[in-house]
Length: 150
Image 1 (tube, rainbow, N blue to C red):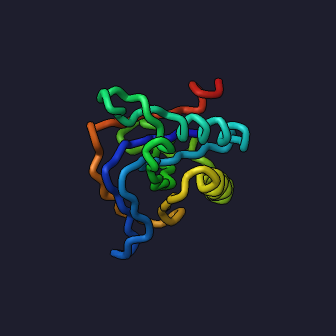
Image 2: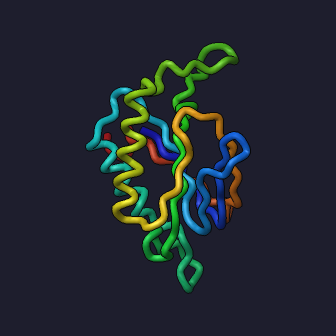
């Protein structure tokens, strides 16, 4: 499982020119799933995500997590995080999770984030989406379950 986390001042996702999810200060999280992922892996990744201290405190030190700033989440499924670019110039997506399983894991992540964060917006699984955001920093962190759980 892979999470690309961007600290944002605002963000939204649209499908067919309709806004389907929108947040103010918080994280945009791009989620990639592979077929070897489990609920246990998802739980560890969610825990790391929700406790990641990358918001500034009163001394401008990155000491605050999402909950401390009453931050919001915009979670987007993105199978392209598992692009394999080793051969040729056209990526292979054979390592990405099968759609039914990936959607199940994505929904699990959404549900469990909603237990701790009051405002969790999201995209539409499998849809062509447009994501716009104002990345604050810029500050982007990549969580890979091979590093977090391995």
